[in-house]
Length: 255
Image 1 (tube, one colour):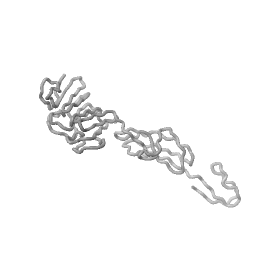
Image 2 (tube, helix red, strand yellow):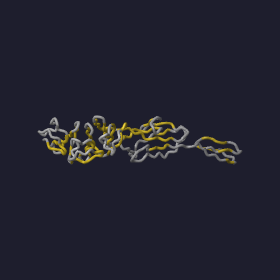
Image 3 (cartoon, one colour):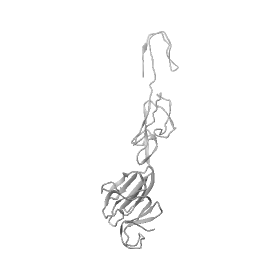
Image 4 (tube, helix red, strand yellow):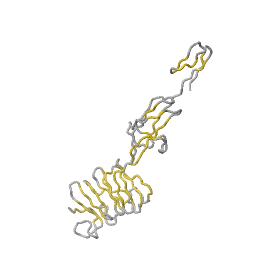
């Protein structure tokens, strides 16, 4: 509130209101103004909208959209809320509300946007629409690919730039956007296809020019961009389809 004392024989008009009509001294009153602020609330890129309007109590506020392309790894933007944890009043772009008697902060809200999932025996891999990979569950053999052997009870961020995922009993295979194939976890039967039986707790590259991948309990099937089929890993029952019962430690062509 702004006020000032005057000693003139005039009629004071502010915002269309008569404030003083006496010849004696009077106080000038200007109603306070309030702002609407936008908070990125954990965004990893982009910028928040700027609302430069100075609102007075009762003024109508129109909520802005995600004009600065805010983004957060593994999440999709889902609107705004008066509380960072989403427990307040939710708004979408174009919604309106009446300004109160205090500044308002609107926090970006985020929700996971999942495109694919793969389940091993005791671990789960989740692929989000932004290409981020998340994992949870049993990690005794490093099948989550997070560089540890620690189990997780909630999905943990693992990697980015992933377009497909497959999970075996205790190994995980991923296909990156450049069509390279990578694997992590148990490798006792050659299921990772890296030419060893060494267990991995971070992803190692296996092949190039791969179109799709599928994982069995302890073996992996690979479809390449040229339409050829390849296989690696446990083969006791002939599941690789190569005409033998021999385990393979690097991918062999089937068709």
